[in-house]
Image (cartoon, rainbow over all chains, first blue to last red; front, side, top):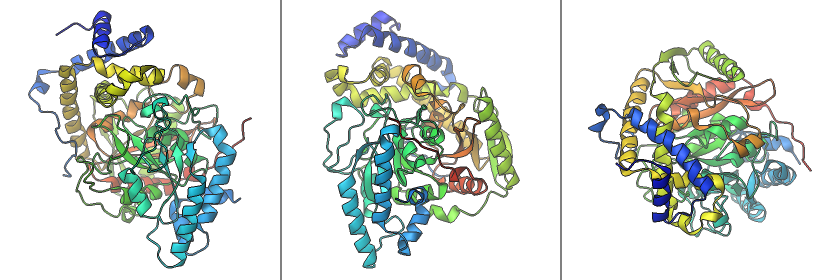
Length: 61
Length: 462
């Protein structure tokens, strides 16, 4: 997977047509660094075979 | 005009209308007078429907006098959040990109309440697209201290109710946007089970976590309004066909014998000391009423907010990508930074977040198999100065977004005030489609306290 760097973020923003300011790019980078680390930390092999909820309506039990 | 009228619960006003002791015109006129006086200070409303509200009130009065009363909501005013589409009435989403947008259709929530005879009073303030700031129409303030923020995103609904500028309001809640302003303004609000209320015609933020629900001054009012709002809607494929009970039948059943789950992790950690004392006093009160507190474990709660945030911004980007590309500079700083962040999460990360969400939902379901509800503070602190909110805002979804992820219903209601006079919110979380249990517990607590009867002292700022 591509490493999450400021360079990647800026290139991706350009590819998606987003006119991020430098301040926007910095704020987004800082926040996503935390979020991506938290997601990776919570990922375990135990979750990899689980199917995410397709239907968010939880059946009454 | 009669300010007392503006603070009566909807259930009481409904009785008085039925008995012809008060008329819809009197109620609407009294509210419009207060809006004139205080909206400039509180920034509750973006649009006030003065003429149409008075005309609709006169029509309601005629219908009721002619014996055609449609039900308990007939002739009562309703204030809709300004991301909820109202036919012929502009719906700005508090965004520069939508200042002139006038929907051609009503949201299903608007249609259902109108069919029940409710009168559209106006459109309440929201953060930009329910995720940014309130830069154009002013930052909504809590009437308990107008140097403090109302909370968001349904801040105009929360402060209008608390200040007697509304009787019933709609809100939307993707990470806590009904419950957070409910707590900071000292009113009740319910995020129903995902699928319980149609989202059709409500500007989307995050399709899998968006919820629509009522905000009111009392739990009983929320029960009354949710019954009308809830139910299957063919326009929203995620809406549920589950039968909608008469929630008001749950009120008055008390809490004797109920088991209340008190999480050991996260929700009672790092609380402001006054919030901690206030919420623990509320737990003792519920125990005195006959409920049993039961410690429960939800260790994933500490980190689950990141999962919620990832899904929320990814889905928000999905809803905004085209407009964001075209009108980037017309988005406020906070809205655009949050929404644009969704562009940089990978499909693998979105999938990963969805899988963790599934694990978390099962963990919460397991706890709710052993208790009747989970009880937490709604927020870990009371009060946010406006300048703090607008510069470096605190994390407000701390205790709420966890249940947007799972879809479980959650109610906030006031459980006390700090020494500085700021309200503290108590959150009740229930089993899927069991909003009735939350109303039962909330009503029992509310009726044994006087918090919901307090009124803020308001001054007009010049």
